Image 1: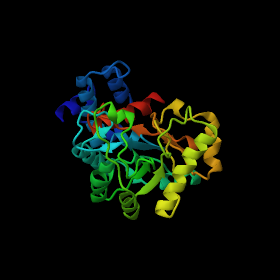
Image 2: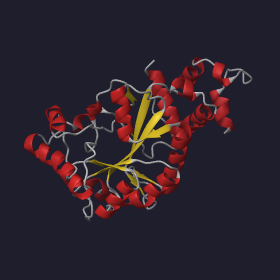
Image 3: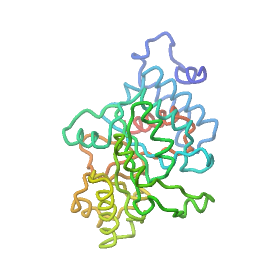
Length: 304
């Protein structure tokens, strides 16, 4: 903690009230840490310490206005500490505490409502999950609920209740565990949102036309049949820039979807297209919630 104060307040008068310290302090830190160059474990630790200083002092409030952030997790499970898409229960709870303390956590539907009405997005955050892993119902959801928060779970409908092992788990020698439909219904009953992630997790960058329509529409129909409602919320698989073909985008509106979210980074601002909303993937490259916070603020400064 002391390290964070030392780096954040370098070349500044510590007695000066935080609210009056100029933004050039953060710009100085970005330059000192050389954030555009390849990062070592030590430099990421330093970033986490600086992030702690930014948030604990509430200085971040001066830098984070009129933007929302949507974060995405994939699997919360304590059995796979080295898997890049898996987050332990302890780390996940640290993120939840961080979100609850420093952000206004909204449902995805609430964020869409604010976008449509022109409402304030300052320091708002939405929590999402992709795929439909079992641990997200048994580990993540109870932690969220304990802290009074809710999330949106995007499920790949053919995975639910199955023993299917996708290639990314097979490559890690992981036996995939998926939610059951009863667990999906329990999540909805507890106030979480359920969104579609296609039928079989296809790459919509290469799957187009009728095949794409069947994947997108089929996932929506299965959710409506199982839950008795259609949320209109959609996340396309893999989430990269090239994983959603331009010719598939009109299908989203034709099928009555309300939004489409990616997973290649970035934040949400007023006027953003709800069918092109960006999310930030939280992976084990980030060493702590405060490291994540530092990256958010640094990204904000890059835009100025």
